[in-house]
Image (tube, rainbow, N blue to C red):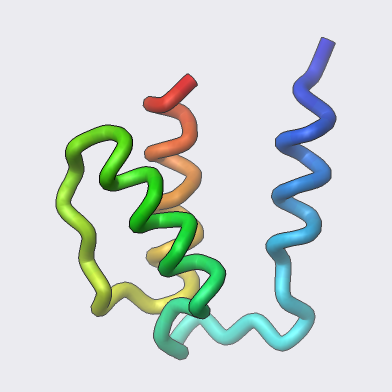
Length: 64
């Protein structure tokens, strides 16, 4: 059975004004910081929104 909660969270995190070239959002930064702390990974505050979304996805997969 698919993880519907993760799908729902992913959909909620999509910003209709998403801009791949803009700096990551505060929500993305907070989520990424939490995941980096949990997994003892470096946090890069210079990521754009697209990079942050991809990094969050990768770290979430590692955390499972």
